[in-house]
Image 1 (cartoon, protein in one colour):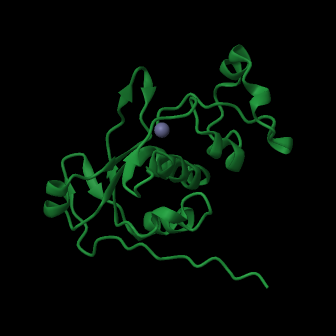
Image 2 (spheres, helix red, strand yellow):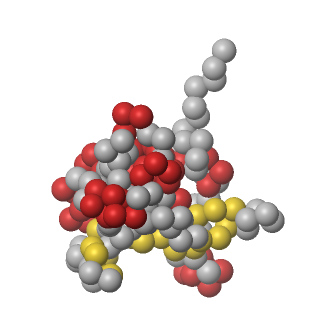
Length: 173
Ligand SMILES: [Zn+2]
């Protein structure tokens, strides 16, 4: 008999604050995180403490809109935060305007975090423009670079069946 996936509930900080363009995320954002942390791909990260912030200002890097960033906090930063291990900053406008893309966005961000051979948390870059794991799970969630995928002829790297419209996304997240 299959045991149901246990979802560890990640909690928003009780006293949500704002500072400049940044604001603590409310509980619904942590609820999406909890779902993503219950996936096979990311379950190993579920014991870490996450702090999620919205950024209420659109920013770009190398001409692409930054939808989210993820950072492993230093010991010093952990002290002055609420003991969080990992900080994720999310473009508030993107989050509010694209409810169907919230889960793949957080799934993508967590792909930047991996455990090394000694079980230390390390950050990693994209294996391609988009993580293969994200495309396999969500397909073309941020649809915008079919031409790019065709151009580099990497398409048959992915055996996606129904998701053959999946492409490597051009977003920066
Ligand atoms: Zn990324």
